[in-house]
Image 1 (cartoon, rainbow, N blue to C red):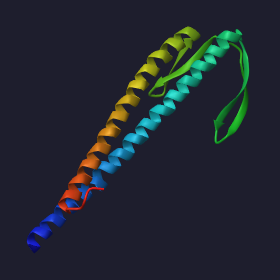
Image 2 (image 1 turned 90 degrees about the horizontal axis):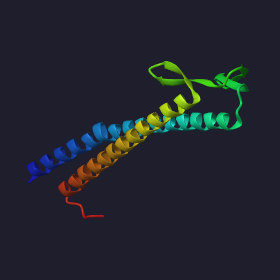
Image 3 (image 1 turned 45 degrees about the vertical axis):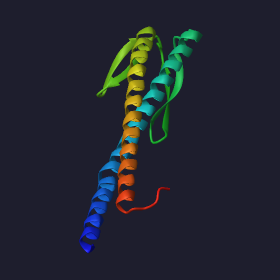
Image 4 (image 1 turned 135 degrees about the vertical axis):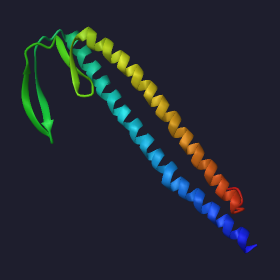
Length: 146
């Protein structure tokens, strides 16, 4: 009887180690990755809104404040707003007209939405795995269902 109790304790420990060492870090990582995609969505949404405001107002020049980092701002004059530079990834920026930028943003937003859905699905799967392993631990310890 003591042998089976020790074997059960080892199995429970193995399952707990798996949850703590693998599943929970995977969950934290997936949530962090999804949050990064949410940030990118907000950036592109803001850019789209700003371009639409420029189009609507017909402004061809602009005076603005630019954050240089660490909340240090500088006054900037944009003599021609009809073209914008958009970060397309990997440190590359492409000069677009407003309509080209809006087309690119639409494509990028669709891709980001798919990424959010993929990460949300992954997060749900990891949570289900955690629940399944915890249920297995509960059964091994012969605890009553909550």
